[in-house]
Amino acid sequence: MPLVSFRGVQKTYRSLQGVDYPAVDGFDLDIETGEFFCLLGPSGCGKTTVLKLLAGFEAPTAGQILMNGRPVTGASRDRGVVFQGDDSLYGWLTAVENVEFGLRMRGIGKTERRERARHHLQLVGLTGQERKYPAELSGGMKQRIQIARALVNEPAMLLMDEPFAALDAQTRALMQLELANLWQATRTTVLFITHDIDEAVTLGTRIGVMRAGPSADVKGVIDVALDGARSRTDDAFLKYYKQVYEMIRDEVAASIARGVR
Amino acid sequence: MSAPARAAQRLWRLYGGYAVGFASLFVLWHLAAVYVVSSVLFPPPATVLRKGVTLAQSGVLFEHLFASVQRILIGFVAGSLLGIPIGLAMGSFRPVRELLEPYTEFLRFIPSVAMITVAVIWFGIGEASKIFLIIYTTIFIVIINTAAGVSAIAPNKIRAAQALGATRAQIFLHVALPATVPYILTGMRLAMSNSFTTIVAAELIAANEGLGKMLWDGRMFMLVDDIFVSLVALGLLGFAVDRLFRWSIYTFAGKYSPAT
Image (cartoon, rainbow over all chains, first blue to last red; front, top):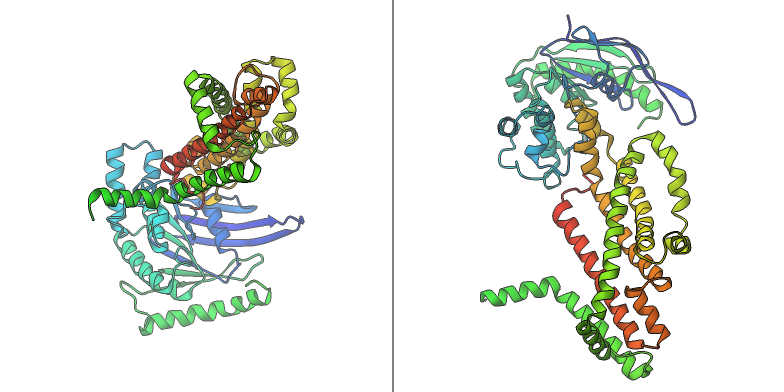
């Protein structure tokens, strides 16, 4: 049984003018335990909608989302979330206090949760920054806090919504490398949303390409048989890049034609 | 450089500008009073200071000062304690907002100064009417700012807490409340300056003591120096209270920045 199944999921938003807009429709997807699934799609295709539905922040208008065979009914600590921007961090808490937030809510004692939060800050390379507030940290560091905050809570899977999209190119490349290493070490199931083919081929064990919206669904899924460290100049890497590119090219064109950025 | 010299330099950097600013205020006042107006109706600072010392020594000044400060403090604290939970509820729950908004939107346009009349009729000229008026002038600003703070919380802050397993009560206590602190404090700071206006107006009209009463007596008996002592006392008091507010916001709530 897959860890997560989307079965004919539909999500319709109503505009202020009262017009219904089907963001995703007939969306089917299975995610297996231990895989790093990259969901790739053109801007505005509904990738983030898929993540919000699985996170339980929003409910589908039709269809079903199952996790371990049970329908998802709301947010839960089964599914840790890393958001694109930094506005989910708590500005009044230090780095270590942000990371231990989930443990504190569960009533885990201060000594233990500090210990675990410190360990996870170390995992994401933030040793020595424990007592700084988010405002004192760079964009990359803030994303590391988010990753540590989600992982320390031991979720069954991690949902990442374009977590590196707002970072500069060098920081992004570094964060991708570190995330790949972290995933090799933990093998946590990940759903990673991105619009960047390069990022998807760098990180994913499988890549799902979404069709341009409205009524977006999965156009196709590509298995990435690359193991360990991936190099952007390897022939195999370029082969996957080309394969994904060919699948998404028409969708990007469709999305541009529709006037989405 | 020696340690005392460094300390002096530090003090100068921190407060030098203020000191010069205040000094220039009194110099200008002196010049205007002595060389431009030159009338007993506009006493120079030295005269006012002498009068202030006399009134302070006799205890009259402090009697008035304490009366006003006490009313402001009681009314301000009560108004804030009432306003914060109401504002939180209005910001958090749509039905509460829809139910209470007519009250806040209607009443906040009736100035507290206009309410002096009914306050005196209802509660007499004693403490009750003054405290009622300060609560009245405090509560709406605090409510509106608190509610605005709640609705300004980034949705992802709430979502992150949900995904970390926080309950609704925990989200309220550990996310919504701290995220709203800067707005609450801003509302309180605005309310404080309104409280000054209100208390003086109320004491002008009906009171047995207070800085406003002192002003009114000064007008009745043509004690111009007394009037100026009261005015200066109000200015200094307001300045001191606002500094205290800014200092406590900086010290206790500096990290509760609304931006992050």
